[in-house]
Image (cartoon, rainbow, N blue to C red; front, side, top):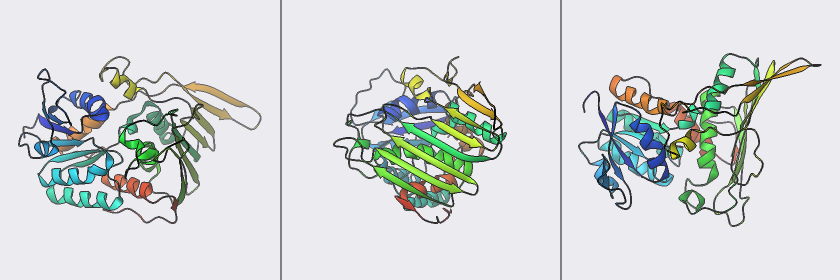
Length: 343
């Protein structure tokens, strides 16, 4: 492997592989997309990468250093295990695996093989979430007492994709919930306890399409909610502290920008025009002011992956946090006193 060129193979070239991973990989100059694996040879020779129809061809390829797994969740473990055993570095789409046990096995194997293993949690670089991090870090709301995070869509029709089917690792909890739990773990670490309600709200739904999770930290309550049947969306974030509060509506625009073909580096890249509102004041008077969002940056993920492989800098998503996220996702619907996820 050349120091300045890490060859990448993507296994699973559907929506995520094609519209999310590919452009973000292309945006990192030290990464080079070498090959992709998809079910049919729909891509043609105009591409700079080759197309394979079997995942093993990517895993065994001597000219590939890093494998990105963007397949349905229930295949993550077997593909990642094979890739690590073949001596490849591995990025796995969120949440990581289907079970904590699978995740722990992969972590152990990555350490034995001395290879990078990292979950793809791009929404750590959402514009509004970066803004929330700054608010908390600078204590602009005082001591945080309540944190609410909602991720909802209005999709009343059951879609044909694997997430909507009765499959292991499918449904909104493993999909939308994985983002919210990961963000919570990044901000606050492991909760003392919690409870999760999972539901089927749409007619003929075959997998979870609603969740409501509450977690307790010392002096802090966290509420996470997701739904695929939400004609009226709640705030994306609602924070309450001892000296103020913050409310933000709307979703980050980067996925939409990538699907439309916008590349990182564009003047509008990562901008979220829907401002949050910062409330301050006392009992008799409350002041509110619009709060601009920081610029989002999904491209920071693969920049960090490249640096971690070439320069041995820290991974963008610590494995301890990925294990904790998997533990919280798997231990539903009720979470009594939790056991710490350990390496």
